[in-house]
Length: 187
Image (cartoon, rainbow, N blue to C red; front, side, top):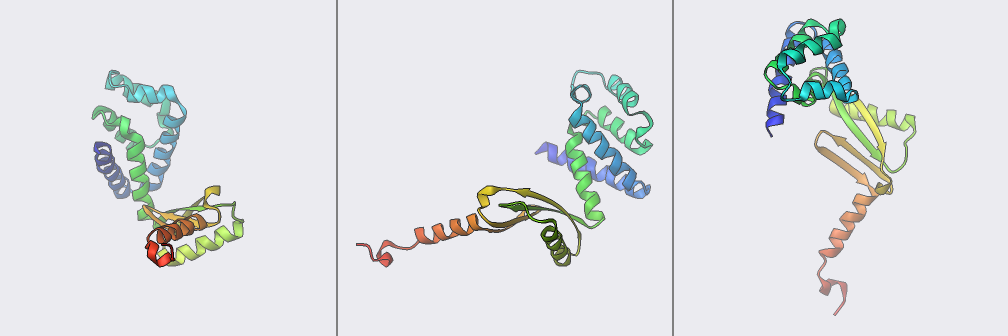
């Protein structure tokens, strides 16, 4: 719970600063690159996240590693996170910032789940339809889940549109279970 609160607070702060300074795209690239660096480099991650390493050592090492590859705003923000001992929440903060940036740019993340891999033309058609419905640019992630049997699931945020055969079978099972035995003609 506290991680979500911290992510919201700092994600909003960096978003507002980057917006005000007209550096949103640059900060977004920097944060994504840093998130990838932390994900791929365990030594770097362990250094930043270790609670007993002095913040000054962390900041010097951080600057040596990223140097001039990120802009000043991003660098200062990360140093603030180190000073406030919030750097271990960087990935969550980065995700919050990413969602705020996408909302600002009217981009909607949508996950499309199907039982088989869908042809590119069908995916494009689904994206076009969703863009008309939501009036946002759709960023589609498609994946296959053979357990669906057939049909599709579309996930937008925490909402799921489930048009899978598996879901239809589950709904049918529930309806059958709710039919009183007397109506089935069984004595």
